[in-house]
Image (cartoon, rainbow, N blue to C red; front, side, top):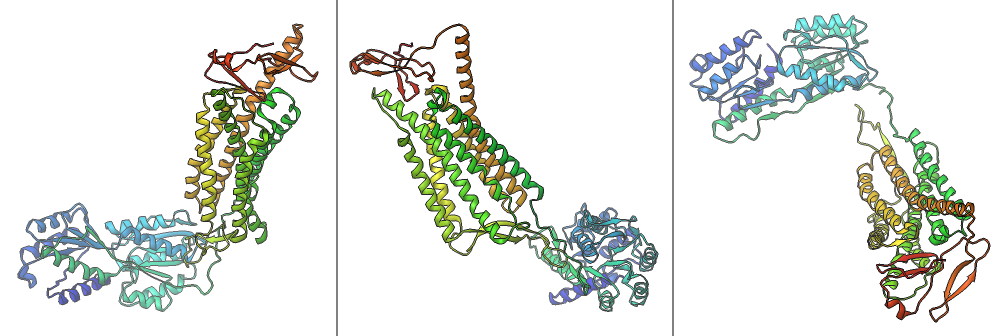
Length: 636
């Protein structure tokens, strides 16, 4: 008497006829698992009673997954293959299960309810005691979790009785706390006469949303009359057809393709004339922008303080030893690179299209030029140290001016600027808002995000050629600089500068190796993308400034403390500030200016004298490098 199984039987009979086999359909009188077991025993033991010579296969929709194990296993023990459909008995020896995924089916019921009435409310379910229906209940709950719908009452067990199911719908329809009713089976509508359900709908459809399982013909008639909001159905005819084919394959000795055979879900619903408003999520950064502004402010403040310190102490030995020009480049480069955090937070919520386009293209300019300035300063300082060491090892005197070490910087800067100009002119970055795959129940876009894209994305490679060239130039030189820093790791320079340069270079390499892959993983997640970029930018800038300046400031304070200690002890500073080689291995003294610090005087020797010694100190400018040989110096 269940119209669903009538449709299954039609599929079974029609397919069997086309395959030259016979399909017999039988069901117990009552919804009782033991009665179903007895029917199975009788069929397999007395096939003649049912107009069959023998039973070649059984397809069973179980009333109870545990009680029916006994009958299923008994049939299998007789060599009769058994498959289940619609309701499974997974712990039995059945060979396959043919049905719709029950949990997914329940999820569709919940989705349709929320689609029709996204404003939510209280809902209740009508069910019966079988495993597949319990899974449908869980699916409904999963779909409505996180929505405005709340389950008001426990599921009502109608025992697959259409009259009881419809009575409960009348009761809940009159309950003002129930806004949605979800029968997980079609029992309230299974009556061949649709009027009982139509009478209910005429009274309560205005204040409740009804989404009913199954889509058999009588239900489709009610839907066409406009008395139900939504139907989610299986394909019962397809189920009956499929299990016949599976059983035939088993009897012919063919290997089963799978253990569970799924069928599709059918949705039928009334589309409102006026759809509910779209709840759009624009994925704006919102308050997260404050993070970028704060990190930029920290870097900017530190850079400005260090710049002032360089200016105030430019005539001291500590600053002269490190060359003020390069120290200023580190501050300026860090300031430029950190300033990219500002345009990163510019969105179309508060700015025009032109404003956001300019912000997009300014980001690579600020990052690349800033990084280039920092990196060039560190690279040239490392190259300077290595160059001096190599000449010292050959006992050659070398003078390296600021101009000499600025050449690599200008070359690197020019290469980067040329690429950035080509990028800006040919295919600049522009701001674009892209829809995510998220859709509401009516297939409308409900989520977008803003990001920078090429103005002509269809052009070959888009931004990739420019990014590739910048990566090759700067990445390649970063690797080279790390190798040079490794070579200079054991060189003892005044104030341990080579050691800290190596730390900064290694920190840069590590930050990029970790950060860049993460950036690609979160490209479509604006908040995560923004957070990763600003923290990576902040880490590089802060590491550069702190490692390069803090040790020098501490060393400078130590020198000043020693001077004050000497002054308190009554020691007079030396009046000799430097020496020059007079060409004969002697010493030539220059009187110290009143503003100079006391410095060491070194005795210079001839080349023959140097060869007879095992140590060597090399002085270039105000930087002292000690090679692996020993010292020949007289301090004054």
